[in-house]
Image (tube, rainbow, N blue to C red):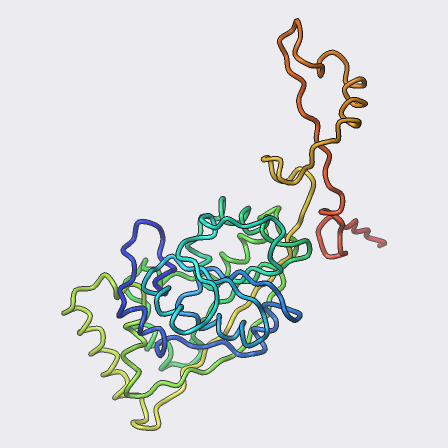
Length: 317
């Protein structure tokens, strides 16, 4: 999707965004339930696109705030789904700490600056909250599906040509902000017919950079493919694997260095500690040093629910 593009790349046109409605597969209900377990959750959806997943999250009873940085996507999203929508990125949001139950993202995750995005997500999640990522992969075991992929993936090195399944899991496993990663895979079938087959290629992010002539050529190629393999008015079904990963935030004392996970000591506590700290921690005096404001960590914010990585694992072998 156009919102998956890295910064500095031309944003998708309105025609590319509109093609997503019929050019991209949906999400099976069981996958949506797995991504956000439980009922009536507060969900932040990043890289929401035109809202294909958003509408399922709303139908499941969740309160959703959708975010996408592509204005063409955002315009269609606002027309399709009645939820709060922000044009931008997670770093642009003024989120209260521990304010959402779940953060959900599609393959837009692969374009994030994870050094800034993951801390912003972790701070926004309540203790025990989930970060879930979902993406589609065509089932290449079928020969005609593999051939169709040559029309859809675009030039080598393009966004739609890059594998993302392993990198997504590896990034989450490498982060100290999140615990173990759960994985699940579902199947969904996309109905393709003579009317919407052009949207398969028009919805690809690399198409936005093509000239009108090159875009027409791409559409002509995929239409010719359909004429060879399709079933006329009956159409055909394009199989996808829907990959889902889910992890829980780890709120560890001292994890963030900006003081947001610590509370200032009360004046009585501060006085008691200053006496024990001695002259080095005293008020500004002959040495010119000023006492550091002591902090304590709010233990309630870091109570484990038995799922975080602060558990002690013992091997009894």
